Amino acid sequence: MKTILSIKNLQHYFGKGTVDENHVLKGINLDIREGDFISIIGGNGAGKSTLLNSVAGSFPITSGSILLNGQDITKQNVMKRSDKISRVFQDPRMGTAVRLTVEENLAIAMKRGQSRGFSKGVKKQQRKFFKEQLATLGLGLENRLQTEIGLLSGGQRQAITLLMATIVRPELLLLDEHSAALDPKTSLLVMELTEKIISEQNLTAFMVTHNMEDAIRYGNRLIMLHQGQIVVDLANEEKNQLTVPDLLELFHKKSGSQVSDDSLLL
Amino acid sequence: MIANFFTNLFSIASFSIAEGLMWSLLAVGIFVTYRILDVADLTTEGSFPLGGAITAALIMSDLPPIVATIGAVFGGMLAGLVSGIIHTKLKIPALLAGIITMTGLYSINSRVMGKKPNQALLGKQTIFNFMDEFNFTSNTVVIIIGLVTVLLVIGLLYTFFRTEIGLSIISTGDNIEMSQANGINTDFTKILGYMIANGMIALSGSLIAQNNGYADISSGIGTIVIGLAAIIISEVLFSKQPLLYRMFSVVLGAIIYRFILALILELPIEANDNKFFSAVILVVALSFPLVQKKLQSNSKRQPKKRKGGVL
Ligand SMILES: Nc1ncnc2c1ncn2[C@@H]1O[C@H](COP(=O)(O)OP(=O)(O)OP(=O)(O)O)[C@@H](O)[C@H]1O
Ligand SMILES: [Mg+2]
Image (cartoon, rainbow over all chains, first blue to last red; front, side, top):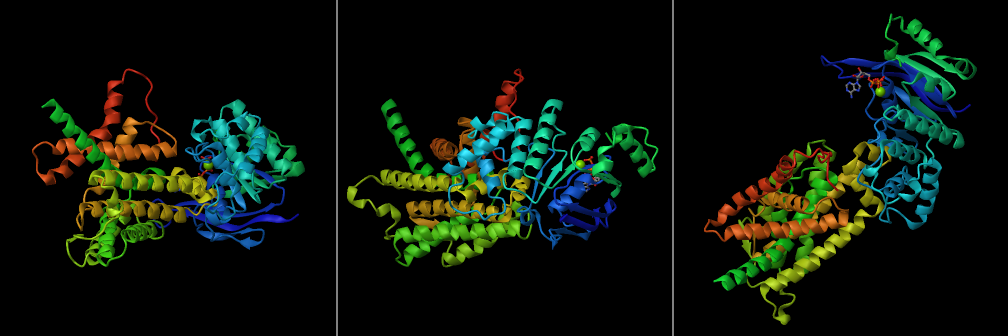
């Protein structure tokens, strides 16, 4: 199987050389293969978001390298990487431009990885396609092309962000607790939608979650991060047999900590 | 007596419309940076007199007024380019970047004006001489030319903001993380916004210098307050609207601001006092939403505070 993303000895410090120095990622080595749908779990502050942000290019990493399809992208910024990597943030407000309409946001996403010019931002012939795409979300958004995003609910926005992230097929889709800020029903809806899109387009995805059931239910591979290191990496058969108690036990064993409060992981 | 008052009021109003239209280009320019891009750009105070200076210099070397006016726009865009690069590429905070360019422009403006503090356009043709054969009053001419320019500029601006690049400028000001995640080069869009804004501000400076009959190196002082006042007045009077209406309401804001100022200037005060009243008007307009909230503090519904602009 082809390797899409390869992370080699990734180290990251925040505030290096200051009193606040924080060694967040301590030598991450990871190969993501084509078609992998990986869920990452780990306690608060384990470095999950930092890992995802490193892959997205949000900041220069302290050391190590990141290869996308064999090409070294370690030095590239978010904008450069955006033609191949797309993402959905935890905060539903983060993924869309609130003052633009639904169709304008989609039109911006349609141009990911291409240069932008002086032609009309939203083209007439695009509207039909947008409508079809929005209809697949099953939220009735296909009739609200001209609605300002700011007027939509968090769940609706998150569904649109998911659509925007995949409307042009990404090589890698990053999801950082993208259903965490939603109510249980909407959260389920967004997760089901995520799985549907990922399997239909056969995408490679990297998803942070705090929900162990989700981590077990979705995807083909599960990674546990603890204090900046990968302590568990299970795939396929091994992963499918996991239960939540198994995971908790694994966590205790691997972290070597006497964590009495399991909610740390949940 | 009453009739006198009304003729007086009418002339103040038509004078305010004429002045307001020319100043509105400055206000819409500031609107582009302050509200659409969500940056406070002080380059204004340098690009405004730059517009006047370039136009005066070109007119004095006998170029047609229209060329002199367009020259000012390009000069302003260049000033915006400089601030934009200082802010985005050198990562200097926007406020500081604007102050730096504004300070540097003072010397440049002085050179453009031949090291004189002002440059009279005595006996030269200006853009306001275009309609001489119609024998309109000078105020009517200013209104017509001002209106045509404003319509043209806003029409162009609105069309531009609906293009792919235009949308990406709005989205940059709205949500920079999302914009970058969608591959928008946010340095580029910001620089472009700076250029458009300062081009319009210099255009305003050019028209006002031509109407006054002279360019003045210190004419930039207080322009940021004038522009902001127009924007805030428009927001207080005409609430949240789509972009096109917002731009026109800023034009109305500029006219209303001129009108208030002209009424104040009817009082027996010094000419230089007007900057003080500009500041007071801005404070009143800015504090208006707060006062409004205080007044209706009984009702639970409070306007949600949003980061960035109020598009
Ligand atoms: N931009 C930043 N500057 C400084 N420190 C940061 C920054 N971002 C994260 N950190 C620190 O890095 C550590 C790991 O944070 P990170 O957000 O990656 O954890 P996480 O695993 O995503 O946690 P959570 O489950 O709470 O989202 C934390 O100690 C956090 O305080
Ligand atoms: Mg996190």
